[in-house]
Amino acid sequence: MNKKLLMAAAMLSGSLVMSTGANAQSLVDFADIETSCSTSGAACAAAIRRAVATLQAAGLPAAQLNAEIAAVTGAAISASQSLPQAQRASIAPALVEAASLSTNAAQRASIQTAAAQIQAGSQVTLSPVGQTASPS
Image (cartoon, rainbow, N blue to C red; front, side, top):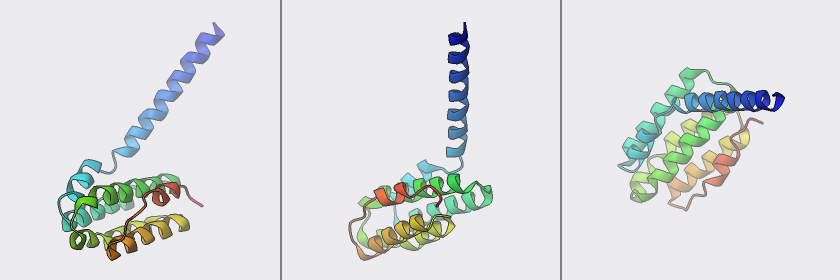
């Protein structure tokens, strides 16, 4: 009987965690970022700025804010890879704006480095952006 209660409690707490995660993910329209960032540099920059405005207005705890910033910038960088260099370079200022929201200095630096690499036409490694999503 105790095992059944423990299993039921574990399942319930797991579902609550998953529903909280799903709610947190709905703050930003990632389909918009992916579509916009594969269309043009201007559309991508606008999508990043919409996401930044949404995150600024949400008043999230630092850890969640940093995770959202990592997700937004990672999605934009990834989806924009097929754009011509001149268009892709135009997303760099929007990435820097997104980085400025982060409470994590390492994350800010990683996103700013990625923005500079994009501006210069260099290959960008996505992992540093995601790895520094937690607050310092």
